[in-house]
Length: 157
Image (tube, rainbow, N blue to C red; front, side):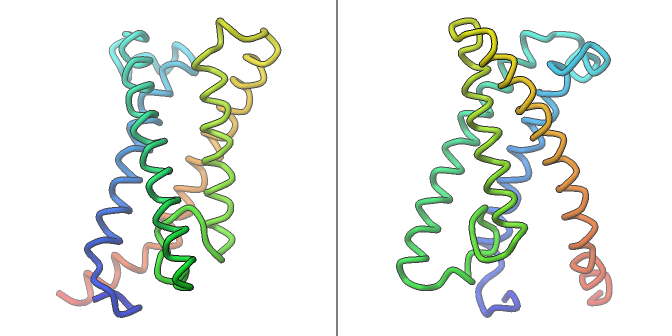
């Protein structure tokens, strides 16, 4: 049981789905930021782009499902039970949700980059890259802040 009296299983599964999707997006996105990261996909930028697009669709579907679940929980007046969602009362949740929306919006601009005006595409690249780097930084912060969970696991053994 978690501290709030719920099984940890749903929280843990949801958290790891977020983690896996984001890490796949980050790993496939780095090669497109510049050739210095091309080694991550064997300098096959087309494959990195393909992986990034497929995973981004899965990520957007996951965000949509999480939002539906959050709305359902908020209608029941139980938002404190959904700490793993990108929405909620805590500042980190709001920050994560805002950056997630920025990534989705700017990614949408990039998806259609050849078909949209150059200025919008350039804006999309800038926002997407900055939001991605901020997200990676916030994940490092998140891991640092949540390190006590690992310490608790080690103490229990």
